[in-house]
Image 1: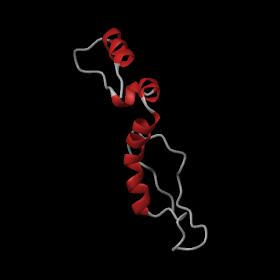
Image 2: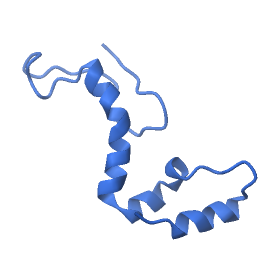
Image 3: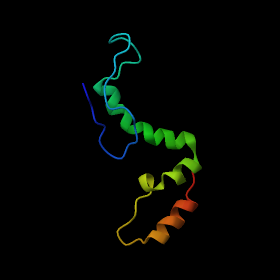
Image 4: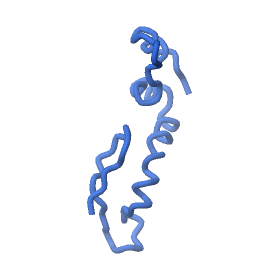
Length: 80
């Protein structure tokens, strides 16, 4: 089976894997792939401010009337 994880989530997983059978903790089922959507948020929280600033385009979207300079200032001043 091949799954594509939707959205702006950065992942290298494109297929399900089954190492050791269905009871193995390494088996990637549809449920696990669905849970992966929230892992990027948890990674940002655990990695901290630098990670948030490096990936600001994913976490701090450009507002409709906001210019790039404002976004740059916003990303430089954000913190966890």
